[in-house]
Amino acid sequence: MNAGFLFYLLVIIVTSLAGGLTPLIGDWSRRSLLIPVSFSGGVLLGATFFDMIPESAPILGAALGWPLIAGFLTIFLLERFVLVHPYPEHAGEHGHAHHIHLGLTAYLGLSFHSLLDGLALSSSYQRPELGGVVLLAIIFHKIPDSFALTSLLLLDRWERRSIAIAMLVFACSTPIGALITWVFLRHANDLVIGASIALSAGTFLAVATSDVLPQIRRFNDADSLPHPLWPMVALFAGIAITWWGRLIAG
Image (cartoon, rainbow, N blue to C red):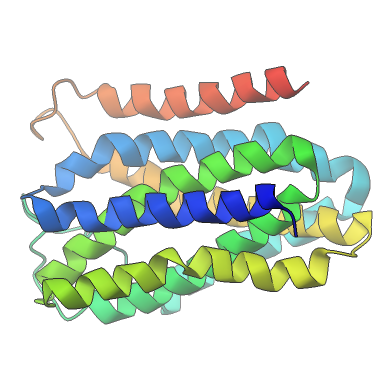
């Protein structure tokens, strides 16, 4: 394990903590999340279609679809049966849902999901042209996820000290997943690494389509945004950044 990989893990811990601790120092509305969430969705889509799928397709050939759909369905089943979404659909201005006591369920579900992000990081790091863009994708969707999760824990009346400790553990979940999978992928052949990248691409695609795009669709002109097109601008900005990064990487 080299210093570059350890640096990636440290960046993820710091950014996750930044997103998770921010709600503890101010009064934030759920709408505050929309622009960064939209941007993160663009980064996830861009990383999936411009980097991860093109990288794994030549390795897997016709078998590409299997790990891709497996990753997609993993997130679908996780969100269907385990994960309570950190952005309550029927929340009010400050995220007050009609029912609470969801914080622990959301915390456990998102922590497991973060372990899968560790798989994405480890597998992509084996191919240098992918490592940076996948790190970017993980960072930009973990920050709003951490922010929203802390907001839900506050809604669930957790003590701030307990939330801070819980978010520190949550921030370490992706690095833990990365370290575990690094052990198994360190000596893996191209086929295993390609399948892992495709599996991770499926999870990214599921998060973007099931979490981010529906959030954008729910907001309209009456939702106190400077302009209803801003979330779309943020989405396409995220896509453009990953496409530009791919061009630079060659």
